[in-house]
Amino acid sequence: MNTLHQFLFGVYPYIALSIFLLGSLARFEREQYTWKSDSSQLLYRGQLRLGNILFHIGILGLFFGHLVGLLTPVVVWDTLGVSHSVKQAVAMAAGGIMGMLCLVGLLILVHRRLTHPRIAHVTRPGDKILLLWLLVTLLLGLSTIVLSAGHMDGHMMVQFMTWAQHIITFQGDAASHIAEVPVLFKAHLFMGLTLFVIFPFTRLVHVWSGFASVGYLGRAWQLVRPR
Image (tube, rainbow, N blue to C red; front, side, top):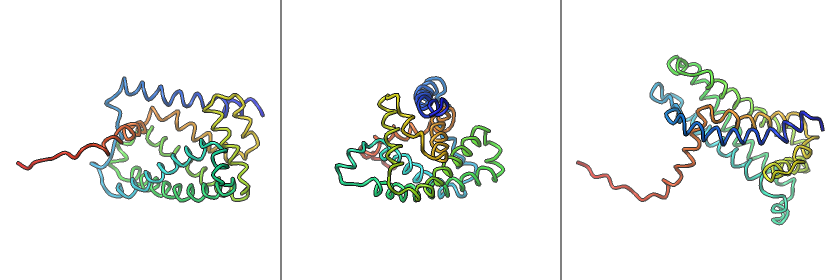
């Protein structure tokens, strides 16, 4: 295991998460008027609904799928009687479905944003970088499914689970657990970690508002009387 690998997968995750949390807090404190999704609906509504629905269903499915899949201790799956190979097969199927939904939605949104004159005019360079980064990260993730199909013993998945759980429990040997995985997986992991770095500086910060508004689901009905 070389120094670069140790930095990228043993140190960089903490840098990325620190920037993600502290950067989001700083932006909320200092630039609240920029805390928005910058929707282009008023400029052009065409294809927005379909692209938005597919993208958000896919990206949320991928996020929570990664969260549960990586952070659930191996002993829990063993106790439930779920073998590593079965868990990998389910993860590949679910990830493939959600990934394709997200990809189709993202391509619709990218095409819409870059080809419609009015929307393209207000699209900032940072927006283009974000869209490109999301697209590359997603394509790398979908590509790993093909590679995983040749290793259905579940061993590689356990390696990534151990890495993630050692990162969040601040164990210094985390990077060593994925030292032997293929480069394609490492590239996807690096791109995913870097999304946390760029998160506070892009329109992605509106995700925090989405989580914060979950409480509205349990709010009492409001009675609106006609004049």
